[in-house]
Length: 366
Image (tube, rainbow, N blue to C red):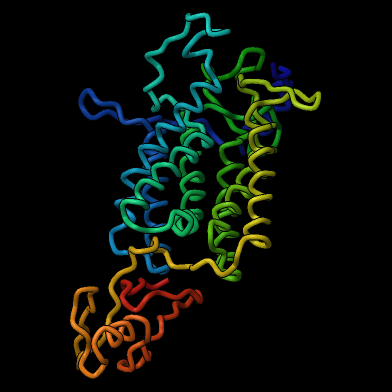
C-alpha cells in the first residue's frame, strides 16, 4: 500500500492560486446518452494517430486506402486488449479482494469510467494490425514503423482523460503546477485542499517529446524493419517508470529481486530491456539486405511502363512490349526501369530521403 501523509493547509494555500484547477466538466448529455470527456480524449487521440500514420504510410509507399483496412482491425483489438489488461491488473473492483466474488462484473465494459492498460492495448492492437496487414498484402514491420509516432501522439492526447476523470494523480505537492481535485476524489487521509502531482500532464509532455524524437531520428537514420516501433517502446517505458512511481492510487504490488513495487513499474522495466535487446539485434545482427518494400512477397503492384504520354500496366498475363522478344521482353519490362519520363524510371525520392515505387500514390506534402 502507498504511504499516506498530509501536508499543512497553510503551505498548500500559498500554491493554490497557480495550481491546475480541477476540471469544470467531465462530459455532456445528448438526450439519455452521456458523452464522457474521457472517451472524447481517447477518440481524439485515435483520430490524431490515424492522421499522422496515414501521412507517413503514404510517404513510404503504402497502398492507397490500406490504412483504413488495417485500422478497422487494430483499433477494436487495441481497446479490448487495453481493457482486459486493466481488469486483470486491477481486479478488486471487478472480482472483489482476493477474487472473492464481491466485485461488480458489470463495470468491465464501462470503459468510459476509466481503465485502459497500454500494454494490453499495444499487444492486441498489433495483433489486429497484423491481421489487417495480411489482408492488405503489406508488411507489419513497415506499418508499425509508420504508426509508431502516431501511437505515442494518441497516448499523449488520451492521457488527458485521466484529468477529466480526476484519477491516477500522484502524491501531494506544493509545486505551483500542483493539481486540484474535487473533494470526492481526494484519497482518504488527505486534506481536501491538498494539491497532487499532475502525472497525466507529465506523461503527456513526455510522450509529445517522444513523438518529436521519433520523427527526428527516423528522418536522420531511416529506421526500418520494426526498429522505430521498438524505439517507441523504449521511449515510452523509460518515462512510464518514473511517472508510475509518483502515483498513489491502489495498484497490484509485485516483488522481484527483493524489491516490491507497482506492477506497471516492473512491466515498464522488462519491456524496456526486451525492446533494447530487439533493437540491437535488428541493428547489428539481422541481415541488412532484407527488402524495405512495404509489400509482402507476391503482393507488389504491377510494374508500370509508359506508352507515349500515358502509362500502361504490364500484367503477368499481358503481352510483351514490341521489340522485347516475347517472354524475355516482358521480364525486362518488369525488372528494368523505363527509359521514358524525366525520372528515368527510378523510384521517386521524398524530401525525407525515403523512396516510393513508381506506381505508388503521390505523397502529400510534409
